[in-house]
Image (tube, rainbow, N blue to C red; front, side, top):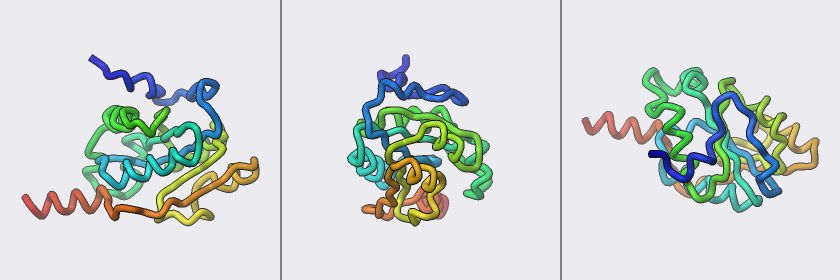
Length: 159
């Protein structure tokens, strides 16, 4: 049985139907391998910057190419997308297989582009395109210093 949030998931490789989403549309992206407090706080803050939040998620192959470790992602794309879609702050979840979401940013044309505080605005992929179209770009400072890599390290040290 699928959850009511399943309707927020766009099938891999498909472009989302943006006509139903209110504007301004906020977009962010990431691996979101093991969802933690830092992720959910960040996503809630991103959602506050607009009327809808679209989250683009790296495919499993894309995560592997990010040099996060040989056993990553821990959770497969389908599970990562479902977890994100179940969050109140998230309106739509789409995946991408490239190393960066640039082609998706160009296709979606969000009003607001957001990344976490470890990304300076000038380094955010797609920032120039969003700014050139009159949009805004933000790097949201971390409230909780959490990372999936650190969490996995702690688990491995414990066992």
